[in-house]
Length: 109
Image (cartoon, rainbow, N blue to C red; front, side):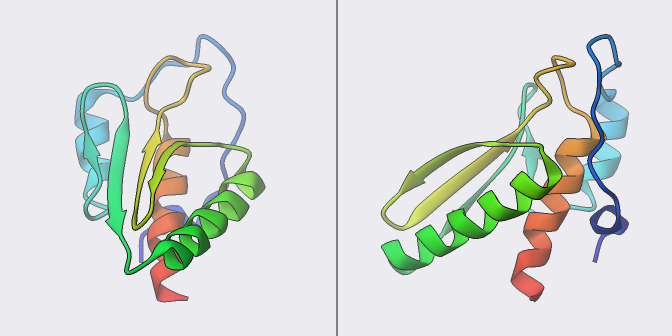
């Protein structure tokens, strides 16, 4: 499990620098399946049915609410895509990776 799961998201005021591409690439190694597209880090999941999809969405909603760091989510019958970026700094922050790692840890509960 990633060491990021032990961290807590923190407020980042405007003007805080976004992570560099090298920092993003290093942190991506801690969140399997997540990718950076130049704007967001994202991952997609597939489920057997709508109920499992909604259970995942609700678990993510609870988790990110506790971190006060919210993703964009695209949801369909048996799929969900989660995208993180830190709007206040206009880029990717460690907060994005903290939440991604905690979402990954949901599977080990």
